[in-house]
Image (tube, rainbow, N blue to C red; front, top):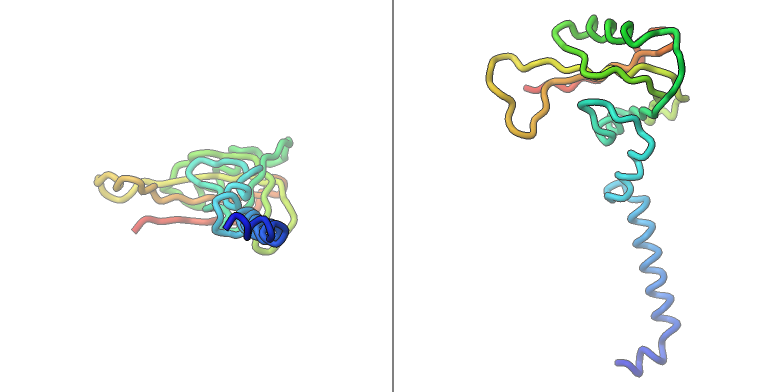
Length: 153
C-alpha cells in the first residue's frame, strides 16, 4: 500500500485537494450548514424575543443604526400598542431594516418587539415562548413597514 501511495502521490494529493475544497465550500455556502447559519447572523441587531434565524424566515434583516430620526421611540411603541392593545412592549430598537426576500433597499426604522400573556392561568410549557409580534415602523414617516405575529394555540 505504501509503495502504491508513493507512485501516485500527485493524483492522491489532487483528489484530496478537490474533496477539501468541496467540503469547505459546503460549510460556507450550504443553507443547512451551521457555519452558514452563523455567518447570516453576523451584523444583525438583536431584539428581545426574536432570533436572527426567525427574522430571516420572515424576510427581515435588522442591522444596528445610529441616527436622530423625527419619529421617537415612544411614538413607535404607541403604534405597536394600537395594533395589539392587549400586548406589552418588550423592546424598541432603532435599526436599518431591509426586506431580504425582495432585495429592497435599507430603511431607517424602529423595530418594536411585543408579547401578550396566554389566556388562562396555566404556565407555559418548558421551552415555549409566549405569543409575540414584531412591528417595524418607519423612523422618518411613522408608517408601519411590516408586522409579523406568532400566536400560540
